[in-house]
Image (cartoon, rainbow, N blue to C red; front, top):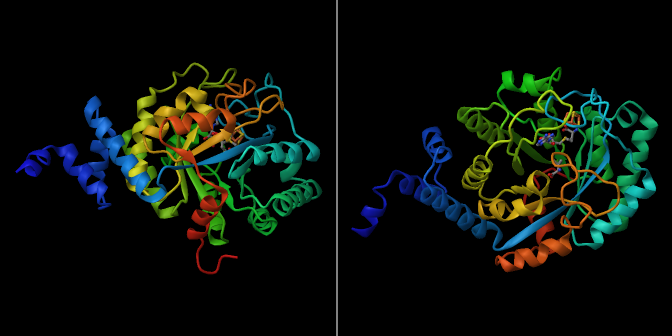
Length: 362
Ligand SMILES: C[S@@+](CC[C@H](N)C(=O)[O-])C[C@H]1O[C@@H](n2cnc3c(N)ncnc32)[C@H](O)[C@@H]1O
Ligand SMILES: C[C@H](CCN)[C@@H](N)C(=O)O
Ligand code: SF4
């Protein structure tokens, strides 16, 4: 009888299905995304944490972030580093600095380094420079045996092949939205299909894929559901959502950043739909203070760990918490412990990667 009472509530019925990993209909997903009662949202977060625990126990992964070139040939309307932004100070880290920062990140206990760049012609249009970059990745792999992610934007199949040969594990490339019209407003003059196709190609050659969406940029609830469907088709290994942070001197500088509950509900629904995948809590959106809520919503990777005082930038909140060391593992680990979570060890992260390997991958 008690059970029947409990399940007379629509949210409970849907969450019970999610808990048993039964497929949810689009209407049910929409219902969850639109929840507005505090208690209902809290229930959804509890189920998200239950599923995270089922697959990952209380272990959290750490990703170091190295934005090694902030030069870019594109003009995304939301991004500080868009080509037309003349007032932003850009940098391109040299080999020695990249090695030194990588070493520091690894010593601090990150499980992976995410090498990110703008679509920098220095690398993308010059074979010699590109080869040097590949050699650097090989060197880091051989020296430190650490999983690597690249976030280079849209690159040729040949470059993706070379990343794979250099030992890179992940290709991160976020579509931002899977609504083509909205995409054209955000990533102006960039092909929607090409960006998607590169991810399918990377998947085919055995790279793991991270897909992501940006919210607070004019999307609808149906757009989010559409993105979930696309993430499923792509069989993305890591899925993310980030709230848009308006950037000075860009076409979207006067937009208002969305209420964070929207991102948090999306994180939770992602956990329900992709229970065994990696879902980031990015320090880049709200810094250290935004971590607690994102972990409570079901995230299991802390991204954008950045060493202090190296002149490095983040992406969305490009300076927040960096130079006072609040994006370092030393600062984060005690916080995790206080909340009954803890960093995974290297073997646990690598075991997860192995599970995602497909037959034929090398
Ligand atoms: C800066 S890019 C770096 C990689 C590569 N240039 C690319 O565009 O794929 C990485 C991601 O940062 C996110 N991003 C950029 N500007 C942002 C902003 N203002 N607020 C939130 N996220 C942002 C976008 O999701 C973008 O895909
Ligand atoms: C958006 C960035 C990642 C690119 N692969 C990084 N600032 C992050 O928050 O993880
Ligand atoms: S999001 Fe990436 S591709 Fe777009 S302008 Fe920024 S750095 Fe360049």
